[in-house]
Amino acid sequence: MCARPTAGYVDELLCGRKEQKEQQSRHILHPVGEQPQDKTDIREKYLHAEIQKSEFPNVKKEEVKFPIAKEEDKPWPVYIKEKEDPKPPNFKEEEKYNITFIPFKRKDSDEGPSEENREAESPSSSASHHITTESDGEHCSPSQANSLMAPLSDSEDLRLHSPDDRTCPKDDKCWKCSQCGKRFNLKGNLNVHMRIHTGEKPFACSICGKRFAVKLSLTIHTRTHTGEKPFSCSICGKRFYDAGTLRIHTRTHTGEKPFACTICGKSFSEKSSLTTHTRTHTGEKPFVCSVCGNSFSDRSTLIMHTRTHTGEKPFACSICDKSFSMKCSLKEHTRTHTGEKPFACSICGQTFSVKSGLTKHTRRHTGEKPFACSVCGQMFSVKSGLTKHTRTHTGEKPFACLVCGQRFSLKGTLTTHARRHTGEKPFVCSFCGNSFADRSSLTLHTRTHTGEKPFACLVCGQKFSQKGTLTAHTKTHTGEKPFFCSDCGQSFTRKGNLTAHARTHTGEKRFACSLCGQTFAVKSSLTLHTRTHTGEKPFACLTCGKRFSVKSNLNMHIKIHNEKRTFS
Picture 1 (spheres, rainbow, N blue to C red):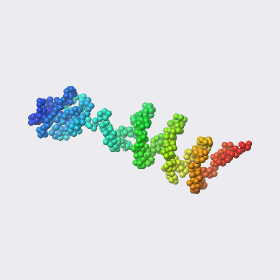
Picture 2 (cartoon, one colour; picture 1 turned 120 degrees about the horizontal axis):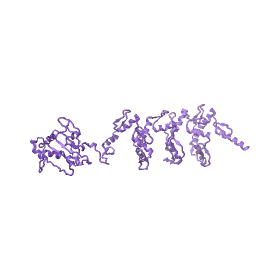
Picture 3 (cartoon, one colour; picture 1 turned 30 degrees about the vertical axis):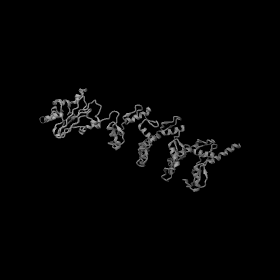
Picture 4 (cartoon, rainbow, N blue to C red; picture 1 turned 90 degrees about the vertical axis):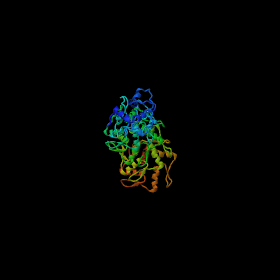
């Protein structure tokens, strides 16, 4: 074990073999022209150099130069090395007991060793923090190594600082990442940063096994298992797992948005949101799907996209057990059970369960249409409208029916089509009880009860219950018939009329009656035929109450009443 040597032991090391080598020792310690000093003076001058420096700060110490002697002439040399701003002492007791003394760094010194001094240091003086004796092979700790020096006062700092633990000067980042060039003022921070490049995650959750690169991330993650939320909002009382999330939440109360885009000036409450937003300007998409190769501007979008490949739906509704791939979708779905509509229009007061619904609605008031078609220039108020429209140019039909293989450009159209195979009709009329496969059909049907005709012709003022009917009517004023039959050349104002006409050439009758099996080329013909089985007469005369299965028959009946009024 290492022990603090006595003054006598140091004297013996300094003088060693006094009688045989006295002349040589004097020659090494005292250059020509200087008077020899006794051992006490040497120890006081060199071993207690730091104490003398602190007691006499104004006295300038002379540099001592030693002549070079041959190796065989100096078995007990003493080297004294001084610097302007030296490092802590480092000793190594070797076979010949050579001792290198380096004065302690003053506690109040802010300057580090100069480049010249750093280069002059031997490897043993910069890397060794213990003393090894060949005889016993024991190692002393840094504090034990310090004890070989002359005792210092209690007020002086005895701590050793290795190069790896040194911090950079203030406002200087001297630790640079060799991979990406990012700089740090602490080497510890650089080591943590390097895990981003190496993928190292040394901290593992003992519950689920998930691994993390930083211990703090593991601590926060563990709270998701324990349910601990130690950070609470002083305004609304909501609790959070970590202080960072609380800080971001507080900005929803204060309205603070400290992160501003340097390109467009838009501000954000989170730095990550600004980073993601900036990529909309630069076009950067660093997150790539390993399955299909699609790239994304943020990690969360990639995670949600990946679930379209895996089919994962980790968010389940506690009421109906329906599952979702995104947490926000679950939150929106839950509002269908609670009836909550937290988003209100500031103009008309209409409320919405989803913020995007309010955004789209607001554009009806402002007339804003920020999405433009790059082919024909048509503008749209919602991005989905532009996406659907673009497919009319490209002819893309990405949605295929699993039963018959028919393809569609819209997912909603596929959903409605699939109900033809299943017979599902989830939309029921509250007036007559009729059910429909899609909501739009129910809406149109309801107008036959209410008489609502919200679409008016700008030329003649005639009103219609369907927008498509108004569009077709408008062409009677313009004479436009843009849809031509490729077989006979006949033109039509509506695409649906052309489609029905084309079947007269092909003989196709795709609409079959489920009761008698009779087939029809047009859906409307099947609808009229079905009423002969059901006895349904949805068209009623407002004068006498008589009902009809076909609207044209009602119109003829109304004329009878009008003629009676004329003759009377």
